[in-house]
Image (spheres, rainbow, N blue to C red):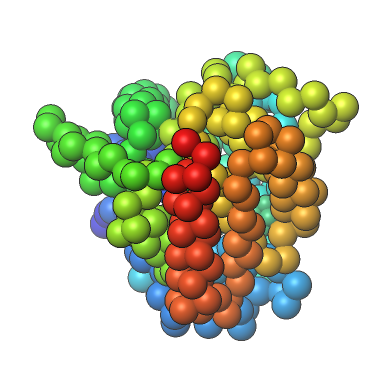
Length: 325
Ligand code: SF4
């Protein structure tokens, strides 16, 4: 029987789902994603997760719950370090343990540890463990890994062409790409991918900005080699990969690209964001006083509140542009 592997469509799935899907499909497994976030998932997550967890973690719990009973395995990787310099936030490091200890009945977890500091072939070794758990041979696993990495490179190059992840997943295997729309304003929307690209929890922030004629740049649209060259004069870098990237992206965009404003999307209950958000605000203020808005997302974020704030910000940026340009 074909093994059914469930992948929660949350957290790093927004960036690595094409990789993971390719890998498991090449091993002959049926990959089942939990799909778009719904109110029900959020409510389930709020019920299952620790009360003081951040919203994305609560949401992840909801996605996991929605897969229970439908899959034979759950793929919950422990993502530690993918760049040899910074680590993912502690919630990522403890994710499989939190899930295992929070649900009474749960399918076996495939909880490989992804940490490139463990040697040049650390990722291959980790994926080998995942493949062996499904009973695949080492040869099949090596081939599946190669294909998955090729898909990952193609996917990330689409992001760097300016596509957002969900659109990039849609056009990944298409020969002809649609035209990217230009906007009357260019805004950087910076924050964690699982907040910005989750249409439900972000109240379709990107869709709303598009409707307002705004062109959006996110940190995933910038090549990592450019981001890692950024010198932002900090005595000490943030420890956490995503927060560090948000800051680097802001510094790069403020210095080298013409942007009309920055929206920082932050999660209620996020420890790293309390530091990163402040640095971001200071950077925006120092560099030509670029308009800056911080949007905090929580499980109660309402459509009306977010839309009003977005409209007011876009309106203010437009007026400022008319006056100063
Ligand atoms: S970085 Fe913040 S929002 Fe993301 S998982 Fe960690 S605490 Fe939650």
